[in-house]
Amino acid sequence: MATFSLGKHPHVELCDLLKLEGWTESGAQAKIVIADGQVKVDGVVETRKRCKIVAGQTVSFAGQSITVAP
Image 1 (cartoon, rainbow, N blue to C red):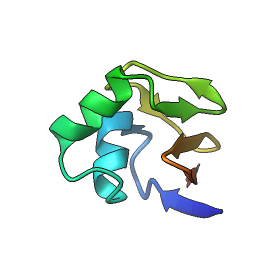
Image 2 (image 1 turned 90 degrees about the horizontal axis):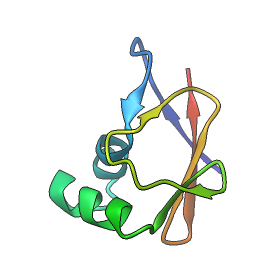
Image 3 (image 1 turned 90 degrees about the vertical axis):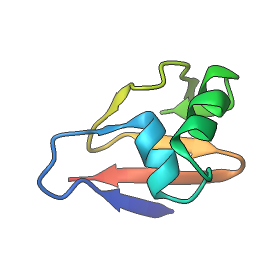
Image 4 (image 1 turned 45 degrees about the vertical axis):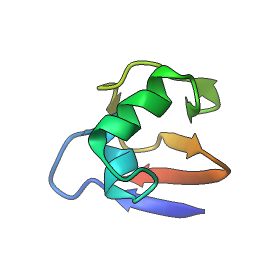
């Protein structure tokens, strides 16, 4: 499974994570798929576009998954 490093940041917003990983072409598209209930955080559908994703959480979308690392 892939990992995403937070670097020196305490969290990443869900919509930004989808965009940074290239899972969506833009932040606007990321917000649409999140609002549509297509994204899961730790196996639960997440519809908050700016949900703060922290180290240890797993995000899934369109058959892809990524674990957030510190």
